[in-house]
Length: 273
Image 1 (cartoon, rainbow, N blue to C red):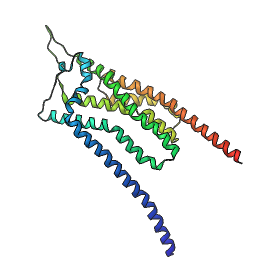
Image 2 (cartoon, rainbow, N blue to C red):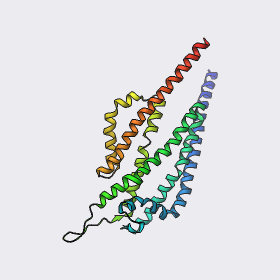
Image 3 (tube, helix red, strand yellow):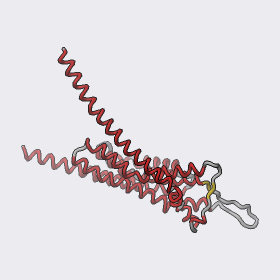
Image 4 (tube, rainbow, N blue to C red):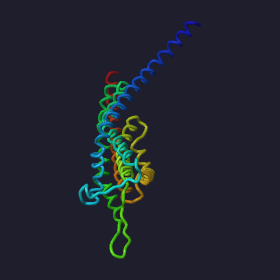
C-alpha cells in the first residue's frame, strides 16, 4: 500500500515539475517582452513629436500641402501630454513587435519537433509582414480618403455660414491608431486560418461553405472598427475578404502537403513490410 502511495506521489511530482518549468519560462518571456516595451516607451516618449508628425501624414495628404498647413487643437490642459504618452506607447508596441514575436517563438519552440519548428518560421515572418501591409494600406490609402471625406463638409464664402473642421489631437490619434491596429490585425487572417488548418481544425471545404457567413462577419467587423463612413468600411472589408479567399488557397496547399506526406509515409511503411 505504501509503495502505491509513493508511486502516486512521484507521478504527481513529475506532472507538477513540467508545469512549473513552463510557468517559469512564460514569466521569463513576459519579463523580456515588457522590458523591451518599457525601454522603447522611454525612447519614443522623447521622440513623440516626430512620431506624431509621421502619423499626421494621411492628414497632410488629404490637405494637399505641407505639415505646416495642418492645424490641430487640444481642449484640456492635460490632453496634449496624455496624447504624447499614447503616441509613445503606440510606437513602443509597434517597434517591439519583432521582439514580442521572437519571444512567443522561443516559448513555443521547445515543445515542437524540428520539422514543426521549421514550419513555424514562415508564419513568424509572415505575421509582421502582413501587419505592415495592413498598416500601409491605412496610411497611404484609406486614411487619406477618410480625411478628404471629412474635410469635404467644410464650407465658407458669401452667403454661407463658415464651417471648419477643428480636429483635436487626441481624437485624430485615436482614429489613426484604431485603423492602423485594426487593419494590421485583420491582415493576420491568412496566418490564423492556415495555422488552424495545420492543426486539422478546419479545411478548405469548411471555409468555402462559410463564405457567406464570413462576408457578413467581415462587414460587421469593418462597421465596428472603422468610422461611420462607407469608404473606410469598404477599404477594410474588401482587402479582408480577398485575404479570406487567399486563405482558402493556402489551406488547400496545406492539405495537399499533408496528403503527400501521409502517402509517402504509407509507401515507406509498406516497403518495410
